[in-house]
Amino acid sequence: MKRKVLVIHGPNLNMLGKREPEKYGTSTLDEINTNLKTHGNETDIDVHTFQSNHEGSIVEKIQEARDVFDALIINPASYTHSSIAIRDAVLLLDIPVVEIHLSNIYKRESFRHKSILCDVVTGQIAGFGMYGYIMALDAIINIMKAKKSK
Ligand code: DQA
Image 1 (tube, rainbow, N blue to C red):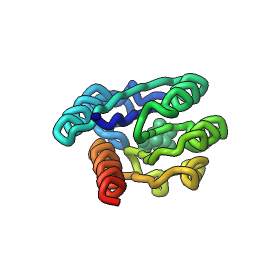
Image 2: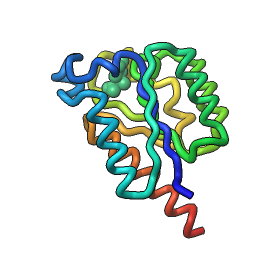
Image 3: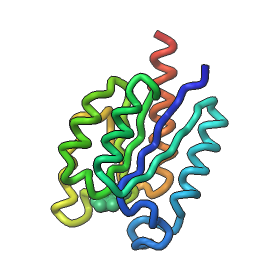
Image 4: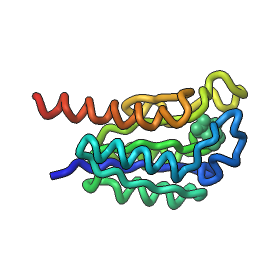
């Protein structure tokens, strides 16, 4: 059966392309999602994407991912720095979780240096723009391969 990976994009990421392109690049969210789905197809992975500007909707989506998805890629956007609810939801999962940021949050304002969920995810990728999402999917593919060969 095909492995299923969920990609969650947090608030304001629906505005990518128009939003501070010097920080986040010029690609739209649709382009990022299409690239991820194409890369997934090439590697036999079903990529599902979800974007919300609402904390509760993101929490509900993470809860639904339990027992349904094999891995999660999440850019919680500004909730990275504030949401204990999203952190607690991630703790419900026992699948690989990659936290991803388009920008290098450690090179930016000090309030962005702290990620509330960095210690409950498998790993974090930051600063590689839209390519970071492909890196995240590759990281997951590698984890899945390593599990299979055990
Ligand atoms: C972001 C970084 C966050 O600090 C910011 O609030 C975002 C996007 C990133 O992808 O670089 O909305 O998560």
